[in-house]
Image 1: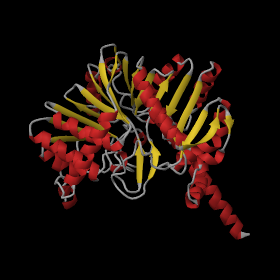
Image 2 (image 1 turned 180 degrees about the horizontal axis):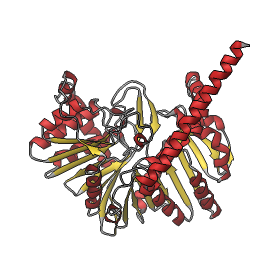
Image 3 (image 1 turned 60 degrees about the vertical axis):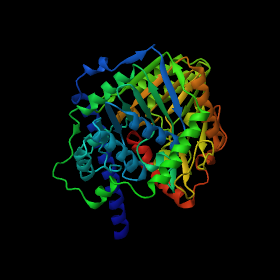
Image 4 (image 1 turned 90 degrees about the horizontal axis):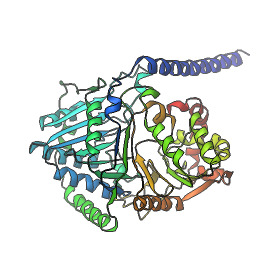
Length: 476
């Protein structure tokens, strides 16, 4: 009996602790939204809609996208601005960093703003100091201490490379091997847009808002460079061969893909700070969906609908608009808790009439080059969509509560460009062909497709994560 009472006390203690943490987050986020806000005057200055001609190129292959980054950096004459959620210290980031150092030493202004999220932060002050000595300025976004459970939830999830105030490359890719076909264990199938034209000045203004935000801070000055950091800025013997393979991949991609002209382009960004009042991208997506007449095709690596999202999907369905969604299965995801939050909601999602496919995890020859060797898993990571075959949306926004409520995101919307839309649709369709159908126009056809070919150990973890993932879904 004593043992049973002890077990009961432990269980009640665990439940009380979980509920206590839940209340801290729920109340804390609500309060923070009301009392913390950046200067609202920046709002109007960053609203951008242009009917001037813009050149747009779509990249759905990692290695080609990386090569294009290296080319743009090499061509910079005045300034380079980078903003990323993840900036790793692996081969991809090392090659990119060395290219940035070269331009900085030749007089180009180079600035890097990287999020300070503890689970993924890698560009530590020791690296930042070496970069600073080479003329590259580094700042960190939101360095709140780990014990500040609420304020650390706000992250900048934006991803930007801006060259000479004239060209921007943005999309779902961070700076790490996984995003550029260079990992031997897991790679992302992602996508970017390169844009040249007058709207880039507004994109740069948004970077400056984040760079000058009270949430952006300088790295610690007393950090001593270590051997690992020193090696990071020095070329390695194998780099020549890798750079040549990247160059060849980039050239091949360029020959099979062409640039498009967009004369109706919109740039949308959230603003620095916590709370829905600083979030604009979700509202912009809802606005574009309200214009849909026939079909909306969406790709998101994580698909966890917040309460307002169901109302949007139901409204779209009532208007006779078909919705297709591509996301990851348990076999292809890098975040099993997102699948754990999605699985119990399949019935509710089916009620909205959509079609849902889950990627299987295999390489996709037309979009993956696997320069890292091995036999890696592959997962979709693009944040993009096409409406009525003529409006393309692409940016950093995941369809989950974190992007809607907590993270700062951005998005480009090109209307009236059917060729670009067709290219993006074909890219999504190729990924759908390597996926399993979970829901077909409102009918659940195969729940198991959401689990895919995941191993037993992963399925057990998925089951254990399900209760917590659904309780704390607003943090996913």
